[in-house]
Structure formats: structure tokens, C-alpha cells
Image 1 (cartoon, one colour):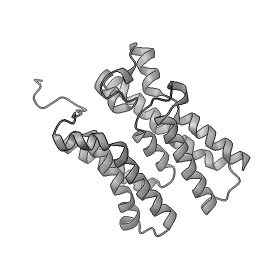
Image 2 (cartoon, helix red, strand yellow):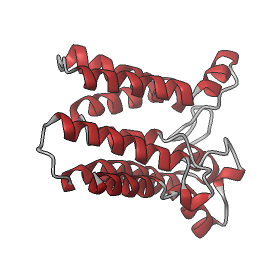
Image 3 (cartoon, helix red, strand yellow):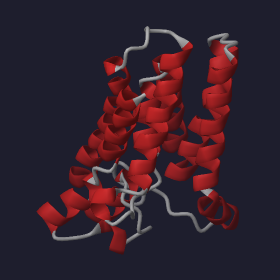
Image 4 (cartoon, helix red, strand yellow):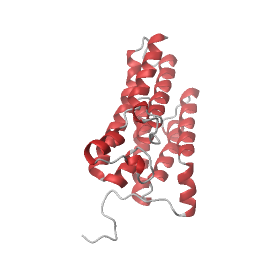
Length: 211
């Protein structure tokens, strides 16, 4: 029990690594939380500082979530057991909480989408890879990161049940909670999407820009 608590604390600390804040301040002299959407995440970093800053932020956020869940291998639980699955869920929650409320950045972080993706990748990789493909497709078609994130999240339990034919109740419930969490954290974005005021994100040159 003590070991599990220690692993959960470490997962929270990993999630608390504020990559967007540290990279913005160290290399650009800018706190991204004071600009754009005021979130300490890869999307806001892209809008405020550009791709050169956003790419490492995205990579670090993915990796810290994945690393947090991989801590489960340090436990005494048998691989594939319900106990280790439950521990992984706790590690996911701790890492995402760390990103949203980072102890290293005044408890003011981001929405945790990239960290969540990395963490869930450590729980059920096949479905996450399909979700990443879904995210990329929706982003390419709409240029809305928020809509892409929510669509990918909603499809996660769908892929688990209908593509991979999983019937393990805790896994299905976990998938539904992930979908609900992403919708909840993007509730302001949903309002902006409905009113047509949501900002678009272009990874490459805008169609209207001259070459």
C-alpha cells in the first residue's frame, strides 16, 4: 500500500512538469498562461510561440503521462491482473491532475489532453492509436483542436467495445469517464464552437496566405 501511494505521488509530480511554462519562460521569456487561451498546453503554446516551441511541449506532455502509468511495473502486482489495472487508473488520474494543477507552476496548468493521451496509451495502446488517428483527421478537416480532442475522446470507449470487442466492465467504464472528462474540460470550447467564435489552429500555412 505504501509503495502504491508513493507511485501515485510520483505520477502526480511527473504530471506537474509544466513543459509549456518552462519552455516559454526559458527560451522566449514568455509565460504562455498570460496569453491566448491562458492554458499551459501544447495548443496554446502553438498559438503563442509557434511550432518550434509547441512540438517539444507536446512530446513532453505525452511522455510524462506515459511514464506515469509505466510506474505500475514497479508494483508487486501481476501483469494483467485487476489490481494492476486499478493502479494504472489511479496513475492516470494522478498524472492528469498534476498537469491541470501543477505543483511546480502555482497549480495553474492546462487541460491535460496530451498528458491524458500519453497516460491512456500505457493502459490500452491500440484504442489510443485509433483515437490519435481520429484526432488528426478531425483536425485536418476542421482545424479545431478542441473538437478534435472531444471527438477522439468520445470514440475511445466506442473503439474499445465495437472494434476491439472488450467486455471488461472497469475498462469500459474507464473509457466512458475519459470521454466525459474531455467534454467537461472543453465546455467553454463547446460554447465557442456553437457561437462560431472558437479559434482555429493551422499546423501549416493557411490557405489564404501567399506562398
